[in-house]
Length: 179
Image (cartoon, rainbow, N blue to C red; front, side, top):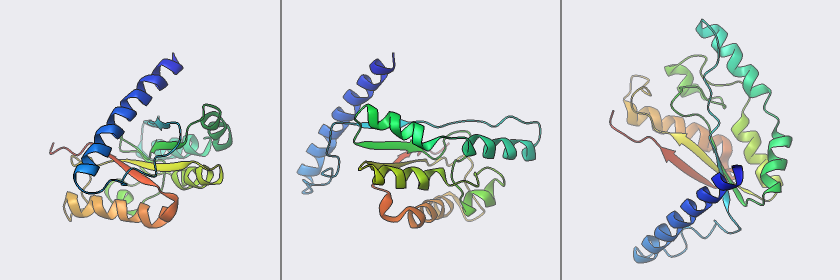
């Protein structure tokens, strides 16, 4: 079953790369997707809603979950299938994130982990010769620290971008809808 899912994802990815590459060529940027060399990439949705009755209990369980993520074991699996790059979600639709961010914390205290799983994964990818793509939602329904969605969301991305620097080979942005 997992091979079937990976196969479908790879086909989807190649179709998107083909169209993106064609469009880039037509727009005068034929080398835009050049970094995506290798066999294929793997996309991982790491989503969870921590258990707990109170926000404090949920925060404790968020950190327990993220703290127990075994990067070596996970990256060995990624490497074993031969992936050349990794797309990994910082969070999506649950308002809980596996990487600290002061802007998100201002909107939703206790909704980001203390452990910076995204930075650790990016470092491990580069150590193993893989590319790392930061997958982030742009959920306009809740991300607003009082300065408006656009300002808040760009500040969230800026903080992650500055922290990861060149360890971030690309961005996958999802959920850009007006509702």
